[in-house]
Length: 147
Image (cartoon, rainbow, N blue to C red):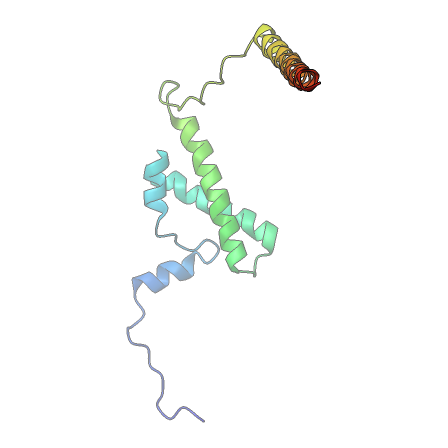
């Protein structure tokens, strides 16, 4: 079936169309100002990082492949670049410190716990032998009493 009604543009081409056509290599990312503020990076530097992320995605997926994988790769690279760049722009006292590792346990506590486990096994074996001895001695005493 052919389309009898011609399709018309609903709005005239304006400044937004011109801006997007000027820089077709790195499309505008609407959440870029928010990401830049969140990571403490100036907006101009964030735009440069976005262009770098798109260039790396072009290298990985091809310049004409604008697939969801391409955009996911570009966003992942952008977030990594923003994280690194934001950390480089912070003062040393503003950088988040990595969580402290737990204090190393001394070898003596490990050896002591192993000794307790070994002693517990021998204690259980001794209790079993004692219980078996009691059982058999009572059984033999009952048999001797019946005679």
